[in-house]
Length: 170
Image (cartoon, rainbow, N blue to C red; front, top):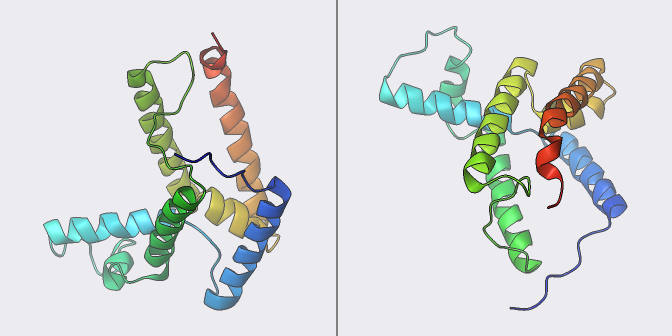
């Protein structure tokens, strides 16, 4: 297998992300985000399993009304396809289990699922994920976006403290 291509310069990648975010605002009137897609998929699946489970005025009824043909589901599909294409073109595709070097596979999976669950819960409570609230919320200088980012980084730092010993190299 050929050697992986070098990664993008972080400053160039940041500017490129800003351009994509600006283009998304211009083209769709929305920023970037992900959690609305998972909520939509969950609502559609729950309604398929038990039709009419959501009342006409309920929060999730709106997701069922759009089905899976809403802009955010298409955005997430594009992110998945783009990520796969980028990893293949950059010769970096390699299934692996990342995590703390001092943790076994079981603990790495437990930490991944626990972190994902807590992050997902927090994203729904904040009504947006790091890209939806942090990036797209801060771009138009909304106070909620900056408040979210501060809370996100404080929570990450406090969560990382007890896990720090697992990250020390052997």
